[in-house]
Length: 92
Image 1 (cartoon, rainbow, N blue to C red):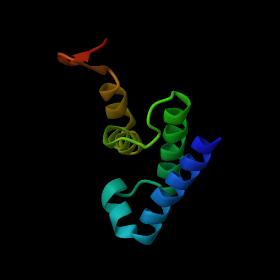
Image 2: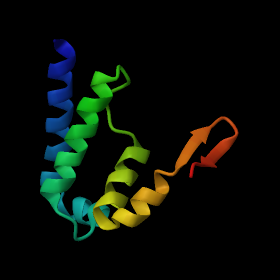
Image 3: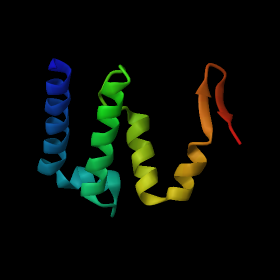
Image 4: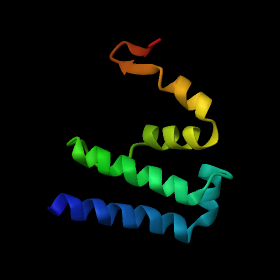
Protein backbone atom coordinates (compact mmCIF):
# COMPACT_ATOMS: atom_id res chain seq x y z
CA UNK A 1 0.00 0.00 0.00
CA UNK A 2 2.81 2.44 0.81
CA UNK A 3 4.28 1.84 -2.66
CA UNK A 4 1.08 3.21 -4.20
CA UNK A 5 1.36 6.32 -2.02
CA UNK A 6 5.03 6.65 -3.00
CA UNK A 7 4.07 6.40 -6.67
CA UNK A 8 1.42 9.10 -6.30
CA UNK A 9 3.86 11.39 -4.49
CA UNK A 10 6.51 10.78 -7.17
CA UNK A 11 4.06 11.55 -9.99
CA UNK A 12 2.76 14.63 -8.20
CA UNK A 13 6.32 15.95 -7.78
CA UNK A 14 7.21 15.07 -11.39
CA UNK A 15 4.17 16.88 -12.81
CA UNK A 16 4.49 19.83 -10.42
CA UNK A 17 8.07 20.38 -11.54
CA UNK A 18 7.02 20.72 -15.17
CA UNK A 19 3.90 22.75 -14.29
CA UNK A 20 6.13 25.24 -12.47
CA UNK A 21 8.80 25.12 -15.22
CA UNK A 22 6.88 25.15 -18.52
CA UNK A 23 9.98 26.12 -20.50
CA UNK A 24 11.71 22.93 -19.30
CA UNK A 25 8.72 20.89 -20.43
CA UNK A 26 8.67 22.60 -23.86
CA UNK A 27 12.38 21.99 -24.34
CA UNK A 28 11.82 18.32 -23.48
CA UNK A 29 8.68 17.50 -25.48
CA UNK A 30 8.68 20.24 -28.11
CA UNK A 31 5.23 20.77 -29.59
CA UNK A 32 3.84 17.47 -28.31
CA UNK A 33 0.83 17.40 -26.02
CA UNK A 34 1.58 17.94 -22.33
CA UNK A 35 -1.47 15.86 -21.39
CA UNK A 36 -0.36 12.96 -23.58
CA UNK A 37 3.19 13.16 -22.18
CA UNK A 38 1.85 13.10 -18.62
CA UNK A 39 -0.43 10.14 -19.43
CA UNK A 40 2.45 8.14 -20.90
CA UNK A 41 4.69 8.93 -17.92
CA UNK A 42 1.97 7.88 -15.50
CA UNK A 43 1.37 4.59 -17.35
CA UNK A 44 5.08 3.74 -17.29
CA UNK A 45 5.52 4.62 -13.63
CA UNK A 46 2.62 2.35 -12.64
CA UNK A 47 3.92 -0.38 -14.96
CA UNK A 48 7.36 -0.13 -13.32
CA UNK A 49 5.78 -0.40 -9.87
CA UNK A 50 3.66 -3.38 -10.91
CA UNK A 51 6.66 -5.22 -12.36
CA UNK A 52 8.52 -4.79 -9.09
CA UNK A 53 11.19 -2.56 -10.56
CA UNK A 54 12.06 0.83 -9.20
CA UNK A 55 8.96 2.78 -10.13
CA UNK A 56 10.78 6.00 -11.00
CA UNK A 57 10.82 6.59 -14.72
CA UNK A 58 14.23 6.15 -16.33
CA UNK A 59 15.97 8.48 -18.74
CA UNK A 60 15.57 5.88 -21.51
CA UNK A 61 11.85 5.61 -20.79
CA UNK A 62 11.49 9.39 -21.07
CA UNK A 63 13.37 9.29 -24.37
CA UNK A 64 11.08 6.51 -25.62
CA UNK A 65 8.01 8.58 -24.72
CA UNK A 66 9.36 11.67 -26.46
CA UNK A 67 10.26 9.71 -29.58
CA UNK A 68 6.86 8.02 -29.58
CA UNK A 69 5.06 11.35 -29.25
CA UNK A 70 7.04 12.96 -32.04
CA UNK A 71 7.60 10.14 -34.50
CA UNK A 72 5.81 6.86 -34.04
CA UNK A 73 7.69 5.23 -36.93
CA UNK A 74 11.06 5.99 -35.32
CA UNK A 75 9.68 4.72 -32.01
CA UNK A 76 8.73 1.39 -33.58
CA UNK A 77 12.22 1.10 -35.08
CA UNK A 78 13.86 1.86 -31.70
CA UNK A 79 11.76 -0.86 -30.08
CA UNK A 80 13.34 -3.33 -32.52
CA UNK A 81 16.54 -3.14 -30.47
CA UNK A 82 17.18 -5.01 -27.21
CA UNK A 83 19.91 -4.15 -24.72
CA UNK A 84 22.17 -7.04 -23.80
CA UNK A 85 25.48 -7.34 -22.00
CA UNK A 86 27.05 -7.37 -25.46
CA UNK A 87 25.32 -4.15 -26.56
CA UNK A 88 22.16 -3.54 -28.52
CA UNK A 89 20.84 -6.31 -30.75
CA UNK A 90 18.42 -5.66 -33.61
CA UNK A 91 15.35 -7.91 -33.56
CA UNK A 92 13.53 -8.35 -36.82
